[in-house]
Image 1 (cartoon, rainbow, N blue to C red):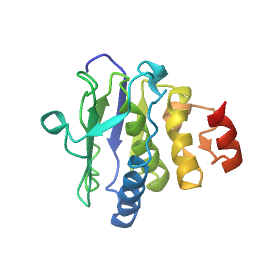
Image 2 (tube, rainbow, N blue to C red):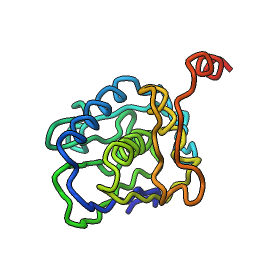
Image 3 (cartoon, rainbow, N blue to C red):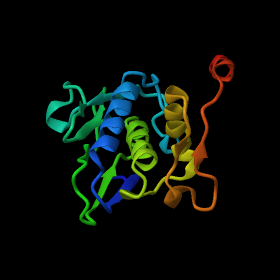
Image 4 (cartoon, rainbow, N blue to C red):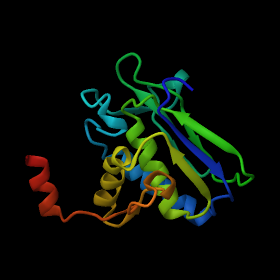
Length: 179
């Protein structure tokens, strides 16, 4: 499992086609608007650029957002890739999976996608992480702000804390970004 910063998910039921299409549409939209840097996963690589590629053998190819799969990895300077994140919608057999990002910049987008799944397809997956609510909050806030709607961090991560992340008003985002 690499350096131990890992996200875990168990497939309870297959993600319905309608929900999956919305997830891939939103993931594609958000991937095109990624911030230059990320401070998820404790900000371990917050000075490194946030770039996505397909997988170890094709880091220069774009991520895949299709009817059958979401697939991506980190890319950039040597060593910013990790375990490839892959998610297919049609598995609901209790399968346990994980993605060890080692806290590298692409961890931000792994969290974004898992927040989308948790929000758009409730009950389809149990999602856990070695990260905390604070680690996941930047990704959930990004998705909420960009999509203009509430997003939810999985309860297994937030525990008893509130898992709802509301979009900020545009004028608040502008003030926050200029600070």
